[in-house]
Length: 130
Image (cartoon, rainbow, N blue to C red; front, side, top):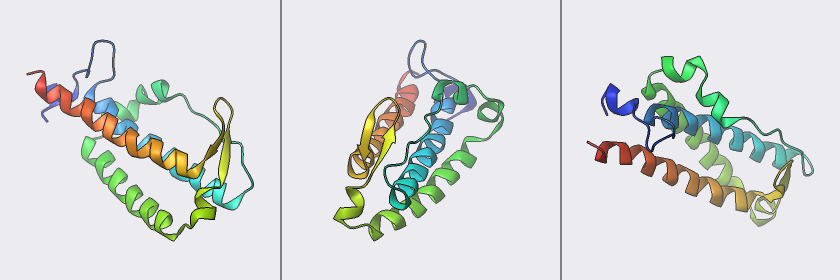
């Protein structure tokens, strides 16, 4: 994608493609940490974060998207290694989300598999706007 496409919102009032690219490692890193907390503590209460405000921080505009793509690839490498080590009992472990309540790791994994695909579709939709 060129710079103009990266700075194009995927829909009116939506994030730019650049913001979406940088959001993915932010979000997936938070989820990875939630996995590790749930695997090492009994139903830990996690801290949500303001995704929209994170997307507006200076690093989103100043960091090349290639940095976030590399970060996401490295994070997914670690996360997949962790996932492959887990048994059914581990996937049944959970964390407490202040707004969503108890979230099992198997449910959270399904959500994040969808999450990545959802945002990739948003990014690709920008290329179709031309």
